[in-house]
Image 1 (tube, rainbow, N blue to C red):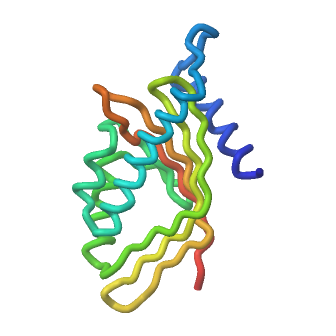
Image 2: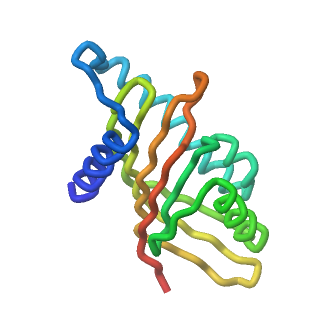
Length: 162
């Protein structure tokens, strides 16, 4: 419940930040919301599957050019900075594994969705070192660009396991 409340707060902030206001006539039916959720889950799962193949280029094709993110320590980064980070990590890794165990949606409009996802991040480095964050918490925001869902915002927090 705490994660959902946090996600709801982020959604409201994003709503005001990006100026999305839903009019009563724009309300989506349950069927429309379910379809949007399926589409966004497909994109999100594809991103994580590509990262699990250590395919930074492939995963980032599903990101918006105006992507911004926030890391564990609060550092803000853009798409180019994230690409460099992922490339550096995955060039030094033999395995990346994402094990999800929680997922919540807030469908703001037909073109804007906020997702809260919990899981376990595990990276095995070529040196044998393990980077494990469990739990890992992400807040993702997706928007539809030219008919395709793109990830344009993410915030990460997690607990590093030694």
